Amino acid sequence: MTEATPTPAPTPAKPKPVKRKFVLVRYGRMNSLGLFEHNEAQIPRTPTRIVVKTEKGLELGHLVGQLSSYKDGRFRLAEDQISSYYVNSEITFSTECVGKVVRLATPDDISEEQHLQKITQEEIACCEHVAKDLNLRMKIIDAEHIFGGERIVFYFMAEGRVDFRELVRRLAQEYQTRIEMRQIGSRDEAKLLGDVESCGRECCCLQFLQLLKPVNMRMAKMQKATLDPSKISGYCGRLKCCLRYEDETYTHLKQNLPRRGVLVQTKQGEGKVFDTQILTQLVIVEYANGEKAALPLDEITLLPPSAPRKRPPQEEPPAGRKPPQDESRQDEPPTGSEPPREEPPATRESPEEADDQNQQ
Image 1 (cartoon, rainbow, N blue to C red):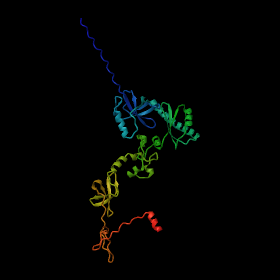
Image 2: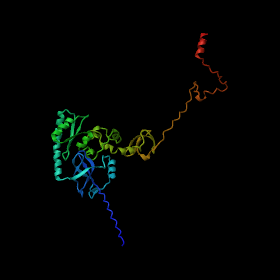
Image 3: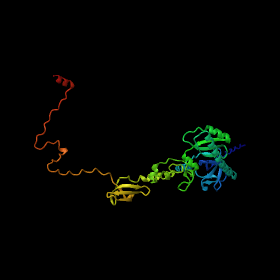
Image 4: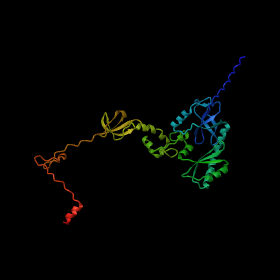
């Protein structure tokens, strides 16, 4: 009898890795951005509010991104693409998952949010009253009542550090929830309370700008902006953030232009750079006769630094005066005279020899 060979057991198929699905959400009073994991089968093709779970608790956020950015409920852009976009745009963003999507917002959730916004003003008034009783020098800017009711966050401004421990204790007893105090600056105040700016649009920090970099007067001077503080200052009272947007372009264009006072050659002749226009790349040249002309950069040629000018020829001396002798010929003896006799070098006496001669 022949023995039957056992058939090998089929190898179990490896389970396919489940692709995690994320959505990009703007959430919180400070309009933070983050990726949230979700299990929804389909993302609605209309602007949607969603309830998310963060480290603070339950919050109501806005779904961010064009409708074409999502496919089968998954955000199509890769993490490195999202990171590079926000880094180049100077927006604080982390590609790590910051929470989960609880559900799509319902009409009841929207109604609850509106109710919390109404009682927020009462919470701010209560906090101001308690701070005044405690003689705390602080200005309450805004408050954020977390959607899930886990905590209330108060944003305040103060000149220095403030001991608000007693304030937190009293507010916690009043509202029976966790109280969080956050000290902010003038730019953050504009981010919370900003309105329409002089350009007719909302404040950039309120709309999209998150990384607030410093702005200085050099940027305003380079862009030929008015130096009137009331016209170049924003809602926060500091220089407008939009002055920084074009600073890189202005700096790059300025490197192509010559400096003031440099000699240049043009079709009209030789002149000196009087001023420059950065955006139009025009050079204002001043000629020797005082006339000025604005010329494109490609129509001028920089001249090398001029060599030291030669000394003008000496005029003949008037009658009765001898011409000055040439310094280079002072060591030569006059013609027909004997060369000067060389005297032996004088020997220096030592102090001891000088004393002996004096005694003699």
